[in-house]
Image 1 (cartoon, rainbow, N blue to C red):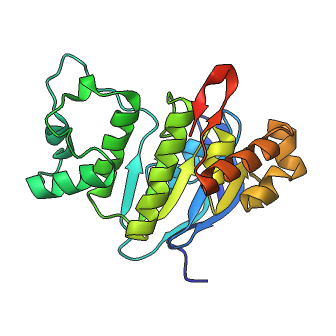
Image 2 (cartoon, rainbow, N blue to C red):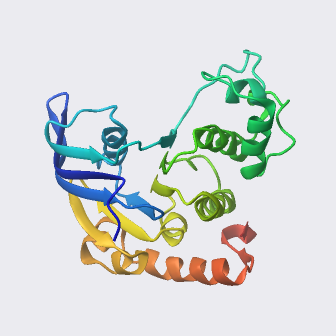
Length: 248
């Protein structure tokens, strides 16, 4: 296996006198999609912030490959709806970019015709795709997404994660995702890290879904849902979900 893009060894983080992470060993290798799952308050977002250097560990070591370029899609980003801000202008902050570069980023994320739309007028799914387009402008070899589908329904989440898979195929970048829609985000992953202050279990989605530590945190129903999503994803079927909702 090639050298990791980023790795954490013996990681411990204390914030406000509270221990958030302890004894965390974690590495991301080129081209892989890794999902981090865990209950609220388990340290998932903190781990991402440590990887990008926004939070300093209390103990342990973080190593980044030379020349590592990181793209980041935050959990939330508030833009004042009264502030005039087109998609094109947003993509050019803080670094000015050319029209062709902006158009290519929007086309890659499935929004080729939205450059003149106001950010305040975008749907939740469109907004997240614009954030992804902005993250891709720096041509990252590591893309970090912190619950990027929060607020989207299950079909919207599934479409977004399929987009992430296509970005990985086209660019070769590695992806680390924090997810809350467990069977959807896990099914889009090569490897899953279950976190609850420390690493509870790690492995392929199928291995983690069957792990006692994972089931103790999330229950036993996710394994069947994961298999169902795999079937729909592999064969391109639509499936009627609860209350007649159509899931892609």
